[in-house]
Length: 626
Image 1: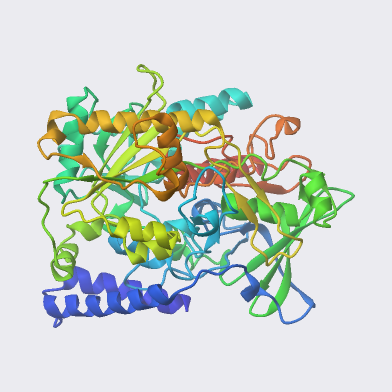
Image 2 (image 1 turned 30 degrees about the vertical axis):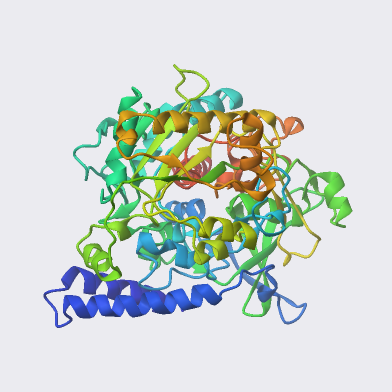
């Protein structure tokens, strides 16, 4: 299937780049796209999330030996793809990249505006949380969905593509905690610039080019501004005295047109950038459809020796001559560690797994908290585009399909605690979408809640979203059993800490302050989210009522992290050291968002990339390559 997928992508590029020059007319291309979208929509609407990974179970108990490799990388997400690329630059090293999913599939995936279709597909693991107490109450069984990408490229196959670095203070705090200056922002900036090919596509957006790279493989560009809300949002920020900024410079506080890792409006996933073009390297192999069940660790020597995985109904054992690197992401990496005997002693004993190393794996899981469906009516007139017009624009590298969903193309980052603070705790953005049956299927809204929102008749709805990034609440990742094909128990536990609820409340008050600016007053915005059944005892005029609202309409921000945190002391909860080595286990590292010491004021994906860049250099130095 992989070669077919790549062929499909190449055909798309050929068709799009040459339309008007070839025999296919523009209208024929649009007609083909419409048919593809219709078929994808039918498939998505009938799709049901997997509830476990039993499709990877082998047919028998026999274990076959696979040829050994120097480095075995588990997971082709952002960090895994980057690491495989950088390590396979050394021709004397044999690199194996194991991935449960496949390559990006067809012509739909490169279209950012249609990413929702792939959320309802096998490119999404389909995880759901455990029942929650302070979020997700508007969802069925009080469980939220938590999409994670399955395939070469990981979640960059299905995400909204926003290029948002962690704040400089995040890295400087890590550096201080680890007593390691190599983790400072000054040093990490070089890694951001190394992979980046920044294109200043919006001359009105401020950019500090000294903080951007222009020769890397990953294209970064501004979202194509196509919606009037984009500039209205920026103007409202100006009304409040808030700077318009390049938020990927040290001056993150402020508002800006969004920066995306797209190329002329087309998705650039990490597999297509860092893996697919390098498959001809003789020392590099990618095995898709390969589900890792365990890392084999010698109980006496505490050396990680091999990886057990299933593929095509068989079970294999592959030995690593040098190291094993787990890059499964913040959900899967702790799961694999615990299945391998590395984790909290009491929990492993509860699920009948021999304890090899007692570490607090999965005990300090963090997520961003997304509060949304803050609806406002308005008299803002926005054009309604046909799908034909949207596709026509897309083929010309412009229009709504070049960015994710119905989001406007601007974002704001704010510190609502300290007026002079440099570390934002809240991000805010807008869309113009009223909830739909398709959104209900993705998010698993309760039927009565969906009916309440769908009955809301707004001619020109504006929906604000608040992302709380500096969350204090600790969640957990735990095993359901010792069966490696069971999904883990994912408990983000968001808003259980009162400080988080206070922060979201501050953000809601700030939102209403923004609505009261001259810019938005012109369009007569009125709060329109109906009183929810659970909150019918009050009106939205008190902190208590807003906290009720938060419980119903807050969900994970789809930014899981910190489940295998980096730190200096395992007795204080650290799982890996400053070189991402698992404490107490030799030849085993973890590299992905799970190693973040805490929540970041940014989006995980691009920060996972620089973790891979840094680790590649660490490994090359350790083995005397650089």
